[in-house]
Length: 152
Image (tube, rainbow, N blue to C red; front, side, top):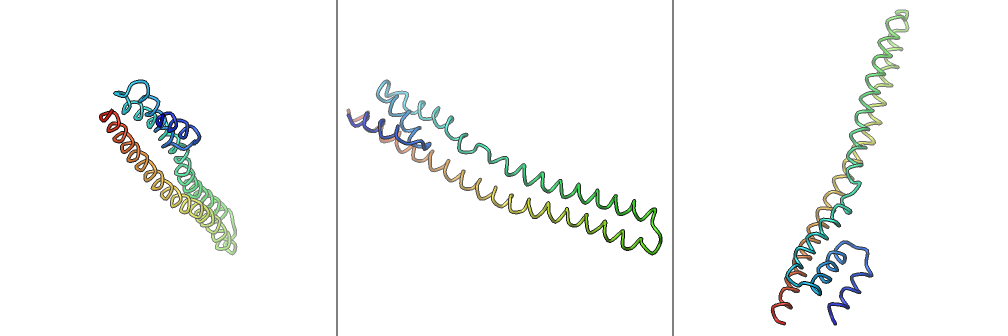
């Protein structure tokens, strides 16, 4: 009776731990010896859902940095190309203008990439903590089910 109620309670949640627990409880009702395996399989299905798409933040940060660098290169190429064909009186102004473009694109790339990397790192730490908590609680639930099985 209590196991069926627990399965029903777990079914009401879309969170990872209740779904892993439900898999273990459903297996417990069918075959108590395979509870750990059922919970491990469910965890292997649930944990990637939590980690999904976080790599996009890292990718965005890297792309922003590279685009800033690319803009720097283009700015320097433009400034040196402009200086080549310019009068002596205009060379300093053209060079300064091109270098300003180069520095602005570098700054923009860093303005995007630094906060993105910080957020990615914080999110990754949180995901690791959640995953560890899921694994720890799943192990506790398994131990409790094992005790119930032994005392039957």
